[in-house]
Image (cartoon, rainbow, N blue to C red; front, top):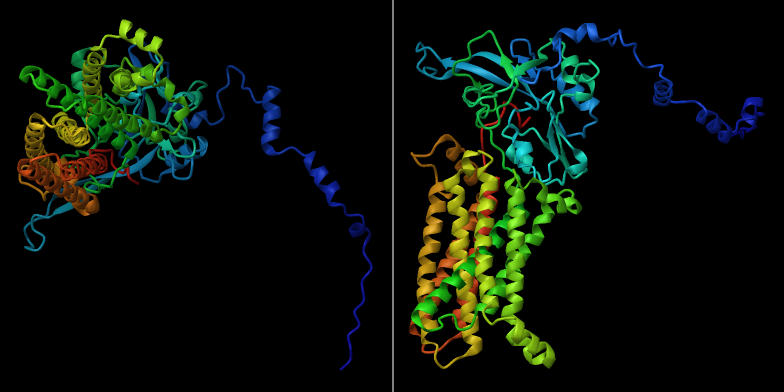
Length: 602
């Protein structure tokens, strides 16, 4: 074998003179397209003469109003269902122009389908629905006359322009509470987890201001989307007429927020239905909100039952609480405080939460935050005053004298009484947060019964558990009155917890019933099929709490003296009941279904 000679070829002049650093420095001197445009814009070269329209105006001028709105008018979208082909060019244009995130959309496209029964020539298909027509539906913000997002926002992060009627979201004001996503029946506001705020369509108001069409309008190849002027519903009669209509098949009732978008079609669409009708997905759990609701309801419930016990003691002339009031108030404070401190975990921008009082005039969320804050403040002060006798032995004599001279002995009890109405009003505000959304699953009777059930039932069990613990610690010789109260309370709690579970079984946990409406039926189906583990956990929690209450009742009735078994049984019942209500509240959020615009899931 002959070895191959390897020779190095001489370097060319260009290779020997190549310098990467010089090349990069040279490239830095060249402006990018964006920088070139910015320079031209700053120099005024991009500005159009006052009498010249944008170059593309000839393609969309007919799609915009010829004049500005009068005081009785506002801008609104108009969608021609016969022209929309479902190509989603509007979705892409909106996404690109607004720089949205990968999974964020301010405009979506769905569809409606008209059906009729199949003819009876074939027994296998007789009576089955068959499609006779399809229309695509493009939807974005409807810039409602009475926007739910604006009314519900606790920090006034929404603004409805008084001239154009466009509903805008103020990103720098948003705390990311996501309440607007509940208040809007059309699910228009979209939460950005990366930014921690909500964003939405603003009809490209900055483009409209200079005579340009919104991105969706300009991009539609079939001119299916237009911006038109519509009359505002100024009188109550106008509002009733506007609220009686439905924008498109499957959409929520227009009476909720008075949307301004118009969907037009030359075809008759009697019996039309959304293509995704019956497709329901599990909603967000909102677990910090669930924890807040359950914890505050338990805390207020414990204060309520303590005051009931105080009234009974006053009438009977015998203290049935066994001196448990200071400890019970402290436990109620701790439970409520845990809920209030978990609630900010639901916010995308928790450092802005101090502004939550700004929407007090219109937002139930603001009212809840303020009133429950007052409740916890009053309860804290009550706990301090009720606990003074326990610590006076360690205080200096001059401080004790000042306490005796300036703080009456009834001050702690009075503050506890004062905290109770604050707590009850706060719980009412909590319920109204969800009732105000107009979602049928969260209607007044269903929500109030659930929330009041936690307040009454679990609050009672917690009160009994603390009273049993204090009875065991004090080990008084005369415990007949408190033991009788414990036994009667345990019997009442067993009946109440059973009644509460039976109600939940009837409205959600059980298989479908003949009396169910369409929304209830869909929520039951979601609970049984997709949320079966939570459903099982709720059933198990009821079984544990009921069995523990039964054990406590039997032991109290048969024992001659306080026994740790009663405290253990009532404590177990309290933990199980609280955990069960936490699961129930998660189901309350996750199983909610409601009418929505066609294709909103897509």
